[in-house]
Amino acid sequence: MDMNRYLINSAARSSHNYSGLFGTGEYPLVDDFFGSQPNLLPTPLHHLRGLASQINIGDLLVKDESTRFGLTSFKILGVSYAVGRLLHSGRLAKCSVLVCATEGNHGRAVARVAAENRLESKIYVAADISPARIGALEGEGAQVIVVDGNYDDAVKQAARDAEAYGWQIISDTSWFGYEEIPRSIMAGYTRLMTEAEQQWTPDRPPDVVFVQAGVGGLACAVVSWLCQRYGTKRPFVIMCEPVSAACFLESFRAGRPLTLHGPFDTIMAGLRCGQVSITAWPVIAEAVDAFVSIEDGYSERVMRILAHPSEGDTLVTAGASGACGLAGLLAITEDESFRLVREACGLNAQSRVLAINTEGATDPALYAQVIGRQS
Image (tube, rainbow, N blue to C red; front, side):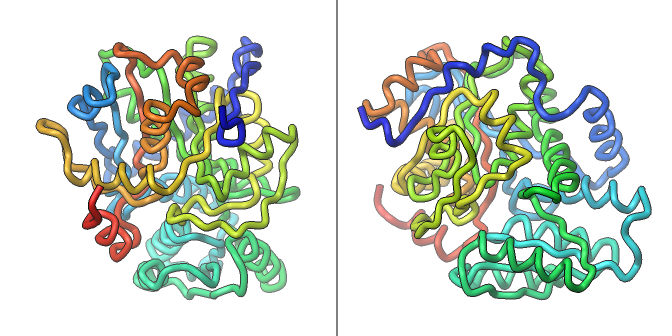
């Protein structure tokens, strides 16, 4: 067995009363906010029964975030909610400048929300970001600052400049002394799960949930919502990340947050993170059931499978990071190295599985290249 590519958290279900990051009062606030925004419509939950049959599971649910609010990722859920909270409390002025670091999706959401509220945005990016992602950020009205380094270097530079010039950081990762806004962003992400439950009802909830890692914001939101809603009867949660940027797997292996320094050689650009969010880390370490690292080839295959669906299945446009959760499912069903993960989650011909397509074709050139390549 290749123990370097997965870890099973056998203690995840020992905390019977564990409820995740948010108290019961937070979820109604999130629902009220999105209920007051008639333009913020739910994204679809697809049943890909053809693909489910091919990989010998009962049903495959895909929450498709590729068209969320006219953008191509789920990120605007968190940004809209967090900025809304700041505006409601009077903590943003007409001259406020919103600042963040990004691999593309989060920064575009910050730029969009800033523009909608007539605020300025400055978005910091790594030196190797694709021109298409820079163009998308500038198209939302952002000033893009390219940092000589990787995403984590961009996070640090954005924080330094924000402190020096009095700008407001809207970051989806957290560090000591900066935790409130990332927490609000993660609370906004829970809306995705509320929608999904409304869409799968009256059917039973999924047995297994696959969720991308990154800095941990989405995974923390998903597992917190599942803990609050279902307690010890919650689905088995598997966290997926690229082999070259497996910061959560390696942190869990070490028993503490680690910093990976790369190189983060993966096409899953939105998941090229070397540091975990310190707000997300305790929740994920407590409640995520398994951690797996995925090679790019699986993500590419999923992109092609979704672009050329089985008969009866819906076509889904998935970017490389968006495909990572389904790539994790494909890997544990095919690769004997993941046999213990497959057994731990009880995956079988009756299982219902939920995966989240977190992004669409955020890099059109890469998407076209992958989709056009032979399987």
